[in-house]
Amino acid sequence: MRDEAAKRVELVFSLFDANGNGVIDSGDFDLMAGRVLEAAAASDGGARAAIRAAFRRYWTTLASELDANGDGVITVDEFRPFVLDPERFGPTVAEFAEALSALGDPDGDGLIERPLFVSLMAAIGFAEANIHALFDAFGPDGEDRITVATWAAGIEDYYAPDMAGIPGDQLVAAGAV
Image (cartoon, rainbow, N blue to C red; front, side, top):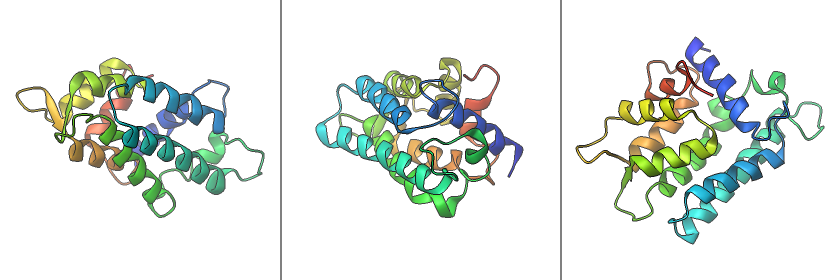
């Protein structure tokens, strides 16, 4: 695993531990989903249901793949070596990427405006300066928008263990979390 990917793993664990108790459990995903849905007030019911389902699947996949001792929680030691495994998590990450990026496009024009992007990423727990750096790295157009496809691909790249020099690395730059 590349050093950049290792840093992304550590950040993701800290974000998934939404209640800050040092482990990941189903309640963390409920908490994070609630915050994201609050930030996506303008999204339609289908997009909201899709992100709820994606968060639920994310937890289910993590629990079935990583909860080595079956205690209903995932420790950082259980999480660290496996989460960036495309064979295990690729479909889950793809579903999440599609649902989250679609949530950022409530008007369905295929474009995500910076304010909503920032709100959604902040609801997940990323640091605002890093969110703006990520958005800038995605190369917004003259009206400060990125495409849904760009964000979805960026999410998938973030979870790839062999990727470096990607826009998502902005999220682990100094000041993240």
